[in-house]
Image (cartoon, rainbow, N blue to C red; front, side):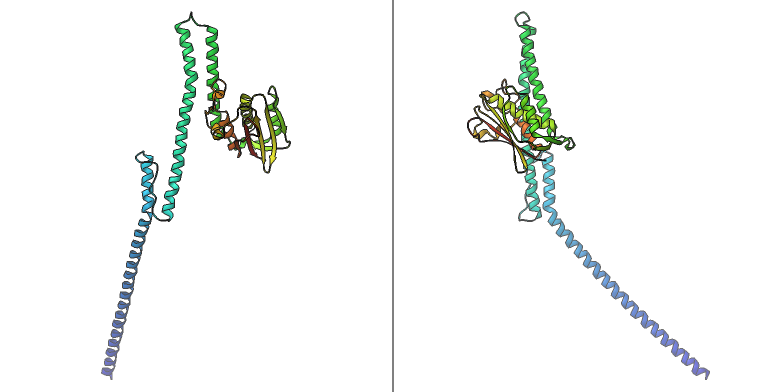
Length: 322
């Protein structure tokens, strides 16, 4: 009996051992499958990442080229354009936009250089005259009229002061704080400006037209337009103020020689003089209309030279009504 029980126990242990071994084999097989799947997944991720990296690098290659060319342009080693990628993708549009910005920057730089050259020339003239008069007085004290030398020196100094004042005003117009603006009644401002003129120009002014502006700048704008008209008029200057939709329109007309159609835009360039009537002696600093247009643009308006009804010039200012 006991021997048969021992045999049964041994057979049970054997079966348990076999079941455990089988479970271990099954578990090992499962782990192998999991590891194989993990390896395959990792390989797939690596392939996908590599493909994405390669594709992204290829897509960004034109962008990197644009950046490198911009660095070269900034260092002065290349001309002011970048290579535009072929096709109509984002890279191509980026290159075209960059070239457009670069062209505008080149235009601004060229204008600044021209302005600096013109300003230097305008400043050099009175300085040279002042120096010549003073040198003559020092070298030939007995042969010069001291009073005339001093008067001439004062005229040159006045011109230098006028040019530098206008140049500073051009800078201040662009950098003016918007908080300095306030409601300005254009009809009142025009009446004050006209009252200071002798003889006063004829005027037809609408009332109740207000603009949001810097009062001193708009007053300077109006003064520059009136100065220009009086300087070239044969005897008549007319000023009108009216409303046109959402804009106040100021027109200053004179009966002088007028502005040729081809020069109606050029007169607003800095240091522009069209003829002998706009010489340095009679034509101010050459910055009056340039300053007037800068002020108009800074206030959201426009200033143009338009076709006159008869002879003469007709300058038209449009400012948005507040």
